[in-house]
Length: 391
Ligand code: KIV
Ligand code: ZN
Image (cartoon, rainbow, N blue to C red; front, top):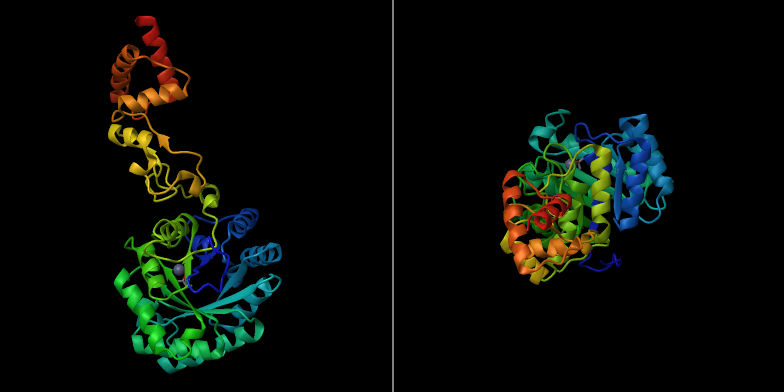
């Protein structure tokens, strides 16, 4: 964890759970819930919180505005389309934050340009006009060419240069439809850094969607190529297949610091708590085998794995459960579990069993495990009572 944002290897974490995450159909959160999540994000060391899309509704405006007023450390950002009323509304909402940011965007790929029916030149003018307007209101302006990964490179360079000249301080490169792949994600950032005049003075961000399951890999590849802000959400919540998961990029940079020498300001021990809370308030449960925060991410059932874990946790775990806010690894008792795990589990429950009794209980345990998916502590206590009564 690093707090020095001037460190060239420091990666800013931009959380958009409350904006892109909430756009997930059915994930609407109440005003109080949004405030609570923003407070947790601020406390865990997220650098920028995208709190909402103020022009979208009165409710969104009120949430962004209250989050801005309550914020302690993080930059509070409001989203705006490339339209003056949107930008004014976003500024109204974030202006009370200690550190406000306006984030304005427009779709630049051929498919997205066709929607407002703007020519390339007309769109370039619109970008210049709206970024200039945002910068006159706020010192911290982020600009995004939506669907950047499907935008012609020459045009992308041209519009990024316009946005920088108009005063954008962060350029975000969205993979809006989760289409890119790691090598291409890195090459795009490298190309922009090399070709766009003025690019070296600003922060490039990566914003990936997970339609092909590559959002985390694409984000990390962009960082290796020079991006210094990752846009992400708790539990990977977001439109369609979701956004890059915050917990995945933070832990990947921590665990594989040897090959990716970048740091974030996030206190990873707060990950599990916020993951559970976001799952509750959004109504989106976390899949059992989800990396880092899934119920099974630190659970072991098979005999070989449990035996290895009992001897040395590093045998089958690449991170410590405490580092993500879990108190311990769980040894799940099921039909694949072995004698060593059964003995350890019984000892946890207060039973010191000799070899003969273990043999008997193990036979009973296997018979039960064949009928049940998981054998709980109460089942083991009952087995011990049966064993004592019948031997
Ligand atoms: O995915 C996307 O392109 C977005 C933009 C609004 C940044 O969420
Ligand atoms: Zn997005």
